[in-house]
Length: 111
Length: 115
Image 1: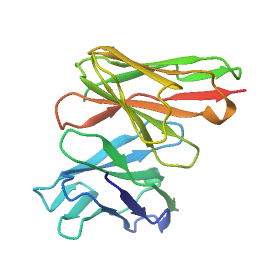
Image 2 (image 1 turned 180 degrees about the vertical axis):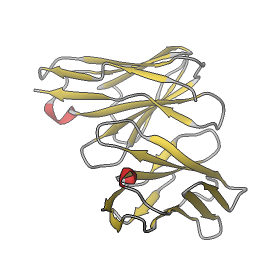
Image 3 (image 1 turned 90 degrees about the vertical axis):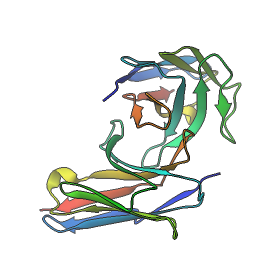
Image 4 (image 1 turned 60 degrees about the vertical axis):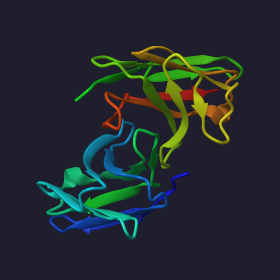
């Protein structure tokens, strides 16, 4: 089955700087890669996703890149703000099947 | 986006009792719902896939007789934690998609505390 690895587990960046979180997946058939933001005690919120027919996608300060050959995908947050502090999860899915999550990254934005 | 509602948000029970958690898709029909468990400071671990009108598919290591899943309609799936023990204390979250291979929407989650 699919296995998703995520790193780093914790990340602290200065406000205004960029943050990058990286994930790898094992199943070459996976074709959908969402990223979720979770605040303490709340449900995960989808922040951006990418499908395997696209190499990069951007939405304002957030961007995701996908390297299918290497089975890597990354989340990039630019101009970080205090409200970006949260836990971020990458995930992968094959077709209509179950979504498997990475281990999470706790992002802290230093004022 | 589509709305998934989960109830109760918090539940405290005594060891040995059973607890039922409901997950509803409010504005769409969900043939498949997913149940996740999240321990503090950990990731979301898939417990089972709930299929409307058929038996749920459980992930390896998840006891089907302990975590009973019923998906009797296209808008409702329930998870019953039977004979709960303190180690079952966790955050349980359901999710559903409004179309094949579509975005996954999450319920609010249910925090279970077993005394």
